[in-house]
Length: 170
Image (cartoon, rainbow, N blue to C red; front, side, top):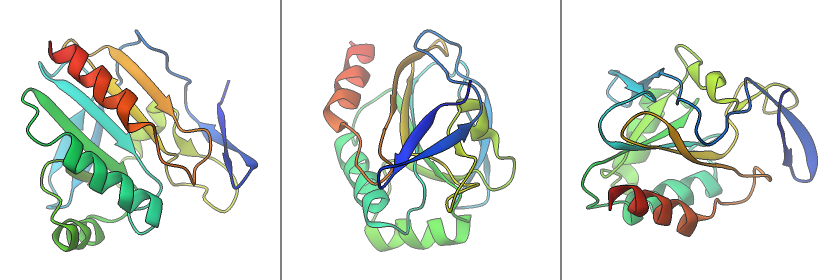
């Protein structure tokens, strides 16, 4: 059954499966700001943080990406990808404007693989873009943590994410 989140209090349905902690993280292919394909999910031998946002061109997504870029800087053995439907050209400008270099910013415009994570908005004004969520995947490719932010206009709980990542590194 599809999950829902809210946009300014109004329910919005999502497409794709409702994943759970312990599930194998689906393999997905996204496109980086440099037009290179990047595989995320699955077993990569590192802790992965997969962050989905509606658009980098909104204040909450901008703030979230900047904070994760700062908070996860310097953590060895962690691969962080922020995924939106924004085109790679816009993502490149965003990264250059805000000096984003500790996380990979990528687009799901080509394959729409993030539907495998159950975060593709399937109705309303934002139909076709991604809900706000964070997935932490362990070195073996299992989902260790999920935060589907219930209200799209709100930021995630950063501290929970950082705590989970650090616990997987120790």
